Image (tube, rainbow, N blue to C red; front, side, top):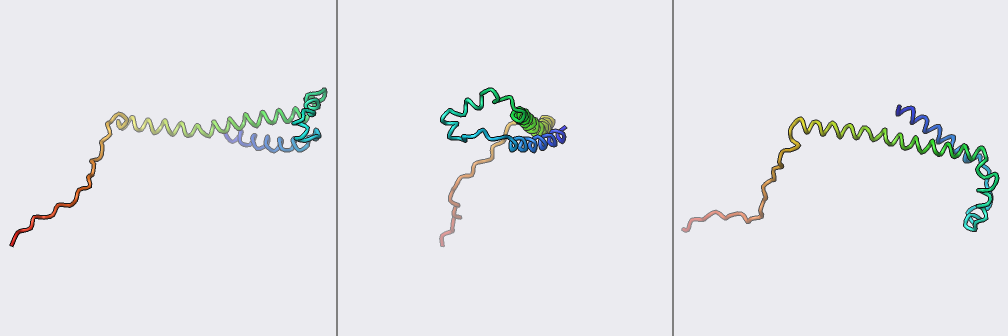
Length: 118
């Protein structure tokens, strides 16, 4: 199933690039978008009715769905590994065992041996 979604994802990516590059520019660029003049063109009579615009929307939606699906499927291996490790800990009985603290080492000066007086 993962391979199917991966292949579908690649084809959707390529088709999405192709459809976006085929679209005709609306004109005006970013300057007209800030001025508000392009809103009448985008939401006008022919705005959403174009075949390429609809194909772009469908491809974008499919791209997002396949991306989320692939991310979920790739993380499912992490969940199964985590469950397996938890089951091993439970079977060994180390899950509820108290932790043993290591002894503290103090910085003491070494003791000098008692010397005999002559």
